[in-house]
Length: 279
Image 1 (cartoon, rainbow, N blue to C red):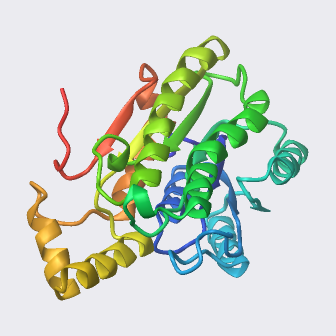
Image 2 (image 1 turned 120 degrees about the horizontal axis):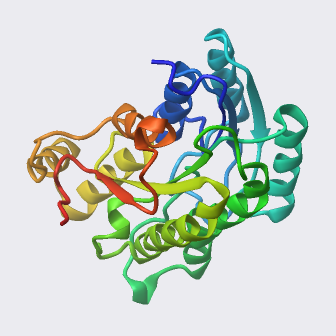
């Protein structure tokens, strides 16, 4: 315990209590890190009806929980699709903390499934802007604060997805965006290594989140099945026979953020209960 004492972390897309980012922020704080929590705090154009976005009071509540652990915390409202918004966040981080040791690019969203032929172009662009371009622009703005940090250096952890490795019909935009995040992770790992910055990605599979719950409901409607049956069928397709929890993804992030993974960079690690196995 305490592997991250004295470290400063920033987590985007952090504030929904059922989300992966929320779990990551709390897990990092439990290990000793000060944590900047950031989120959009309002709905994003192009995603109407697709998923629930966090409210700023949820971001503030998370920040207070981190402070209650005895850590420093800062709230940064940011739109990862806006370079101006990201630049303002970077200045805030620099002013408050001076540097950054851990960056978790977790902000993401997905449009409603549809065949490519019928895909809404607005949803397509919004998905790539949030998941892929957001990861690029946030990293670009903050990497200057991460170069040559003390000890083994800084760490960037990008939230990709099993969907970035396994295609799924009706989810072209999300699959393409997350595949892009995986390749971007590898290029970042090569470019940033001279500055003592390691870069890895986590690729969650079926995880109990708002987005996944919404996906079950939509699949149940399309297949004319009860939601409970869709969830059961999904769990049965996983070797460990259950849906994962956000905390289980967060624990992998903690490992990647710590010195226990000091010789790992450029990896995209599956957290899928065995649903995806690779050489």
